[in-house]
Amino acid sequence: NNIVLYTNNNSGNFAKTGNSIRVEFNTNEEVNNPIVQFNVGDNKIPGNTMEQENSTSQKKWISFFNVTNNHLNGNVTVNISLTDLASNITSTNVLTSGSVTINNVHPTITLKNYGNTDKVNVSLELGSQYNEAGAEGTHDIDIVSNLDTNVLGAHVITYSSTSNSGNTTTKERTITIV
Image 1: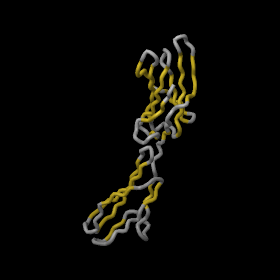
Image 2: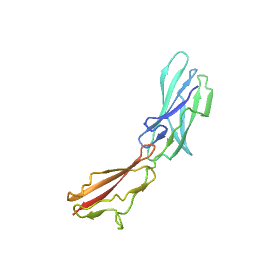
Image 3: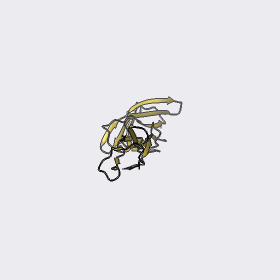
Image 4: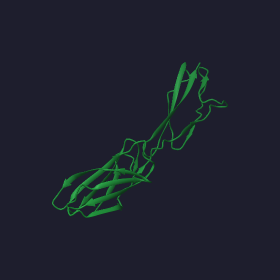
């Protein structure tokens, strides 16, 4: 039987809080409702299992759970217990096509101090030149700025970084033109 493990987000095989992790499988004979357990390390998570299709030769099943902040980070494995109509039980850790890793870790961003100062946020004189101080992080960082040193007031520069699983971290730097 082909057993497929996947997540409902666009990041491939990474899942984060708010995503669901799903397994689909077929049975070649009549069985009672299968019991599916997802495992992440020593954390055992019961699946919500339901029949999807019933043809003359096999049934298609799907089971899922929704990832929360309480779930550990790590690779997901699956255990399926089947009971046929004669009460014979088969339980096994299964090999799946596809893999899913729970990753609730957010990227880090550290803003560098501006110029020769020990400050992240600074004031500059009207019309002066701004030299981007930059940032360091665990993933690529995108910088969005509409800073115009010819306009008085506070200007915000936004730094954002997104992990493979779609977790995003944002930091801001304020440049005040005086």
